[in-house]
Length: 353
Ligand code: NAD
Image 1 (cartoon, rainbow, N blue to C red):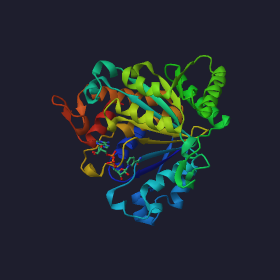
Image 2 (cartoon, protein in one colour; image 1 turned 180 degrees about the horizontal axis):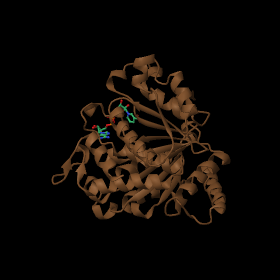
Image 3 (tube, rainbow, N blue to C red; image 1 turned 120 degrees about the horizontal axis):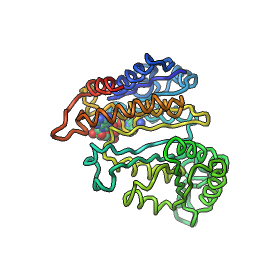
Image 4 (cartoon, rainbow, N blue to C red; image 1 turned 90 degrees about the vertical axis):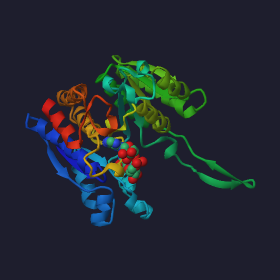
């Protein structure tokens, strides 16, 4: 197996270095893979003039998985749009045809105070949002703003084919099998035909997964239930636009942006793994960033691309133990706990692997 390592900008190199140490530790225990570094984002612009250079395109196309830190920084904000770091991110997702975005939101008991919700509402929270990433109203044609009868009108097209719905539904059912075997599909079938088809196809797909309990929920209710009683959910699957909104809502239930990993998969479980946060230029180079979201992204890589559940669980239990022992980076620090830097947090995880 080959893993492309794209550290990126800002805190990217610091946090990815810790995830690499964790992967190396598992390798010395018998997991077999090669790590190959590449450039993406601002660092790639600095070196080559492009945010997604040809060498990186080849590297990620050949790799089985990609580990990404984060890209971007204020020094790049004035570049022409095609040279901006974020363009590199969009291009890599498109090149690899990553249509399934998986975002877990897990609340560690020790961090319950970081949530803006009451501890009793979020305690024990462990949700996985599966969002379709390459279709829906964000990409549907026709789209535009035009003059009609003397005024401007704006329009977009919400569109999904049954093949697109079926492939994301399969990813969600398979993910549910790796968890508590409950899947909630979110749609707006009471007003949108496109999502009526969504519901029909997800229901048909369920026949292949009789061991997973399927339920359906309208998106307005889902938005409400996520803050009312989020623990009712195990895996949630939804389209691109609803997923965009619900996955941000779900991630904020935990209150700790430095703790949340993500995976984006293609139809053969090749994946791009990255923390959900950005490059945090305000703390870059200060050994202050929380590396846990990136380390947990490495755990997702083992689970979803390599099917190495044991390695994934070892990383996740190490994170739980380290938090229970009181280690905290500054973003999750509370009086009475031990404040550590990025590298020392990596040391603590390694000591528990
Ligand atoms: P950000 O996520 O980088 O930072 C928001 C806040 O959270 C900052 O105060 C930061 O210090 C803190 N933070 C983020 N990650 C942290 C961590 N691991 N440990 C401790 N604190 C952490 O968002 P932003 O400030 O809006 O964006 C900064 C840059 O990152 C921009 O150039 C933006 O375009 C880019 N960005 C990149 C990605 C990505 O690569 N996927 C995602 C979002 C933003």
